[in-house]
Amino acid sequence: MNETAPPDDIFDIYEPAILPSFWPLVLAVVAAVVFLGIIVFCLVYFLRKDSQHAKALIDPRRNAQAQLDAAAAESGRLAPNEFGLRISNTLKDYLLKRYDDPLRFETTQEFFNRLSREESSHLPMAKRRELVAFLQLCDELKYAGLREAENRKQELIQHARTIIREKPPTHHAPLG
Image 1 (tube, rainbow, N blue to C red):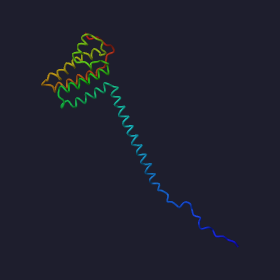
Image 2 (spheres, one colour):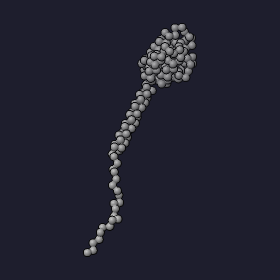
Image 3 (cartoon, one colour):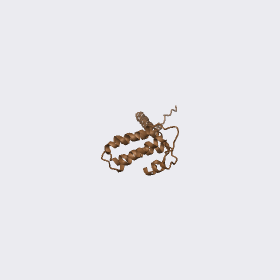
């Protein structure tokens, strides 16, 4: 009888291995979800912030009112000429955006000269009259060094708010 014994040199090719834990995978997935959540939150936050800023830029009246409110809140710490310049620039920016009037790039005297020559202006007559009074008061506050400048600051703010608040008329009349 010829029985052969099995060969002793046959071995498993792979040794039994310990399977990796699934917890690192769970941790990686949770970290990725949290990271994506933070990115989405930041995008939504900044897009919403930009859209609110864009709305303020689109609506010159709201933008000017916000700037006037900020200037009024800081009026106590601003020097009269700095305060007058800030209010004046706010109103000039409003008129440029709202009526496409180049007042932003003119001195008060240039503006008065342009109105006296009755050059075309997109500003309604009521706005022109209010603006003349506003600019005179603003120049007094900026350059005259008035002793009652603190009281005049509130008057200047009220003039600016009146000009911004006013509803424009349907027709434009020449100054005269």
